[in-house]
Image (cartoon, rainbow, N blue to C red; front, side):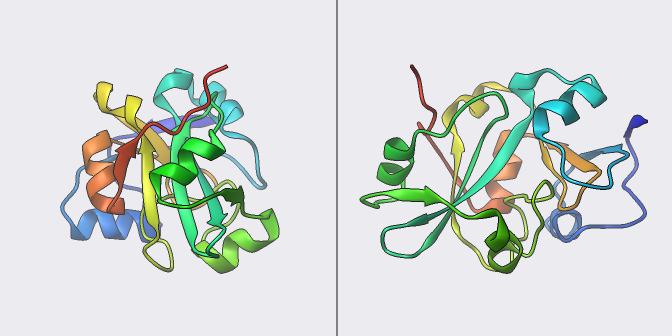
Length: 166
């Protein structure tokens, strides 16, 4: 059962605490979930348009540094553009088994806000055209809705052209 809630969830995630500390407004969307489901299924459960829901991808560059990319759920990260946007020769997706150790979040609950460390983060530049976007809230079953500019401020992110166009 999916629901949208104007009030903040009782069980705060690290991302929610960080937003509260920075006085950044957000809305929570909650859904029942015991294990990973992809963001498209989440958008369908919540009745949200795909172009408004974003996923968080974590990569490792050829320098061994980690990078975070936030893109629309139905789109694909262009690895060459992503690497260029962070000044790397190349980037590769982080293996699922490494996500928790690197970010502090589990697969499906990973968000650019409040990771274990502050990584260089890029948000797809098309997000700037939207009034609000929805990203994972830091654990399974929680999504956060906020302005793209507030997401960028909370995650210390920049906007960049990082999407693959066929």
